[in-house]
Length: 69
Image 1 (cartoon, rainbow, N blue to C red):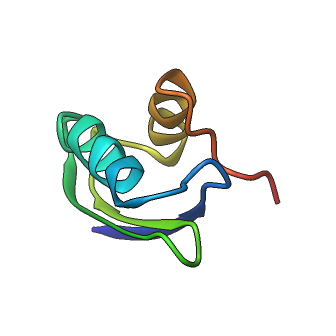
Image 2: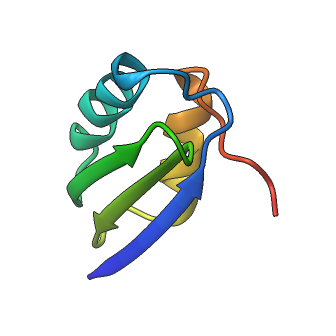
């Protein structure tokens, strides 16, 4: 199981976190999604077949691209 935190600058409210959570929980392999509006971060716990890259693609597709580091 992998735990990964993503900074998502487009998060502005709890509704944004809820939208991200709804979309990512549909990805096969994603076990849990939580978010924090004040820090603009999303924490995701996942396993195969989900990958960090597939999560980034999914976030970008719903207009919540993670910040690049």
